[in-house]
Image 1: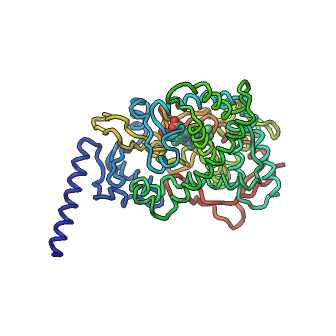
Image 2: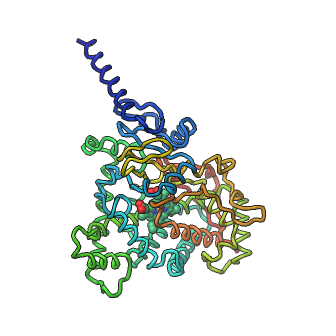
Image 3: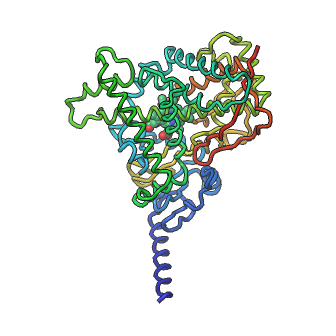
Length: 487
Ligand code: HEM
């Protein structure tokens, strides 16, 4: 009886293996998946991108891995990413609506939608963000205001050690809030602090084991305890909060004079009210501002934390940056994006921070919306596509000595800023980050304002080494800083 059972199990396993290799047909090569779990067991638990780097070395510029029974095609290295996301931009413009995201935004909003819904949300969002100052002088003034508030907070610490994370989050979130809601929050407001914690928890869930498991086995996972339940609850609370703000806007708005993103969206809803199946509804409004609230906060705050951490680690680079800032702006002049060309070393430093930090290692998953032919392979409709950004930022064909932090790689022999095409921390192609110019501006202004006023030092007895949080986002473990006022 037992041997019969064993034979049965073995036959089933061989059959599953056969079926999965049959399904692979013309997919790019990759490691052999195990039945049911695929290659999940091979992924590095604390840093999944490290496994993908190893697989890229072995299988080349496009390869397939399996999350459970589902294949995912990985674009490895700048050339492959460019050929797909730019060369075949339309083909690769689909977003994978993974079960976690499906449950949170129901295929609506900007980030986790496709087709006409996505096109309309994206066009509207880009135009409206620009109308309310993104990439312009008006938003620069808001960023400068928040930077000054951050400086005051650093000053109050009088050179004593403190963890700057919460205040950086609050500053960055207040910038996006000023565009979305026309208002800012008090940095000490407990509700605001709670919301920021939730934003961080939800972003950090991306790429963790629980995230992979929920997306692979949603029908089982939804009944089990685990971190995913907290993530869904966080999303519910955040969305309820945003719905409340939309209600307040409805009560106080003047359609002739939209004050912010929400008012403009409400006008768009009115404009499209008579259209059947309009994509501008109360739900899509809440999901789009939810996307922007989260997208506009965590990544930008994290990159500012990386810039501070790297300043602590490389004192000689800090001195060079300060010297340049002093000679171009002096202690008093507020930085503006127009100063960038006159601050090539600082600009190079900030670019190298983005490359070295490589915070969104695997980007956000895309999907093949139809069968795609790429480099002689066929990626079947519905297959997840991973734009592996880390492999571009660490691509040995485009960068020397990838593991070294070196701002000079962005300077030419005359000390002028030199760009590198493989520098794509915001992605590329039709899904490229909509907040890129805002994020760049925030990093530039916050960072320079802080270094004009303070020298950043590691508190006595604390480690200067890099300590990362587990997961697909390269986040930093909490660290303290001493901000010594410059005279
Ligand atoms: C350092 C800061 C930031 C980084 C590194 C970053 C990175 C990214 C990346 C890698 C993507 C995915 C691209 C793709 O799918 O191929 C993305 C998409 C997106 N980002 Fe950002 N981002 C940052 C800041 C922001 C800000 C400030 C906002 C809000 C204004 C924002 C809003 C979005 C949105 C809405 C999308 C989805 C676009 C779409 O699906 O069409 N991001 N970002």
